[in-house]
Image (tube, rainbow, N blue to C red; front, side, top):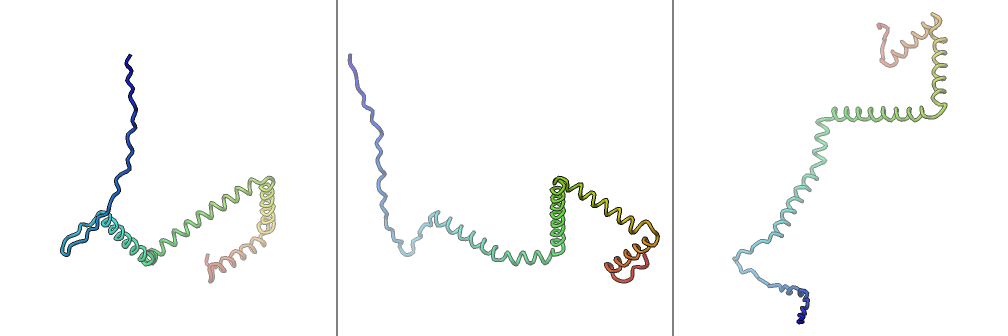
Length: 150
């Protein structure tokens, strides 16, 4: 029997030829081509100049915008602050309500104060008149001037 042996040869891994630099000096008056790397660098520089110009003028733009829309911005800020404070208050009340025996205690205090207020100011005509005078004084202190007409 004839056996043929074939040897497996791996592909040669040859290192690439070293690249040699060729020093080309431009001839006066000759045009030298601009590489794409130089063009992209110039484009990035232009973008950088535009961005830095916009960022340097940003405080002036924001100041002018705030001056033009001062009332609307303040109104929106107050509305946002009111919503946040309302949510925070409701969260605190819900947390207090979850504490055992604290919610019933507050209910008892409220019922007790309501009972005292009715007994102190609403049962007799003279005390109702006193309460009416206190409310008028309070209203005139808040609104200013004489609020006897209402």
